[in-house]
Image (cartoon, rainbow, N blue to C red; front, side):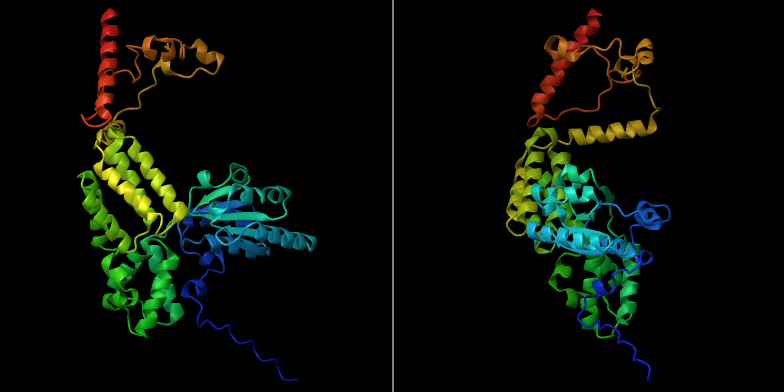
Length: 435
């Protein structure tokens, strides 16, 4: 009989480059060395054959889905993927049924939930009994802090692995791998740098942009001009790898600091128009509320956090209005960098100073020996003192008595704070005079 013909290679036309380059082994993964390097947590789990439930927390395009698939493959486990954006109780129930069938056949199951933070409490709770019973291994992926977005009960049954954005060197490796896969020349160094900046640590975004550019190039080396034609107005107006990105951020921050709501709104809209992730803007606004408004108006931080949460719930474009509201509020709020300056001064002082011991009266005394040594003995409980203030008490290490770093500004709420501090210091002076 004639030999059977070899099976044809799977066609790749129409398959996105990011999917074609999805790693098939751990050694093919680019990035996440802190988890996958020798002796690191996930590498040890793979090598030891210990499959366990976990939450993969990190920004988009850093390999969360890839790692989950690799885990299932490494342990010959059934892989069931659920999108928390599109799925619900029906999909969870189907996953449980499929896992039960696999278990009856002696096979393990990995249930992967993408964007697990979008499942509500009851949906997350639906996994608990099956995770506890060992029916399947649960792997959740999230871009949000799991401490706030994942139920504590589920969180307690899973380890949290933090994934990082890919750095410039790692993205450069991806470009080389993509060029080899496509059979095209690598971009010019300048074009590669802009691609890396445009990707902003997101491997998927980089490969999609490179794939689009390579299609337009048709075998010609990609340069900056071709890259702009391929990616369009977004790259020209808002280049994350270039100076304009940082200039626009700087303009927004300085407009807020300068109490100019119109300028702040203009630069905010420019950032959105240029394609920047609104989550990035919200993080910068939170920083501004702490750095430039501070305690002159403590509401600014809360309003900004509320705006960030609103955007997370509504997305684009509806949630952008909440961020615009925060931008205007920050711009018109009274300004103070007193806490910012005090914090930086304290950190600089501690960095160059010696490690001073905690005064004995401030020390904790959980054991009999510590009590016998006098720990906490002379401590004055403020609530038992007049005005709930232990006038003259020492809270800094010996040698730093009277040292001051925080000095409120004469604006907003800090006017009241300054008056309160002046009164407390007067009580300290009176207590010292009596002593």
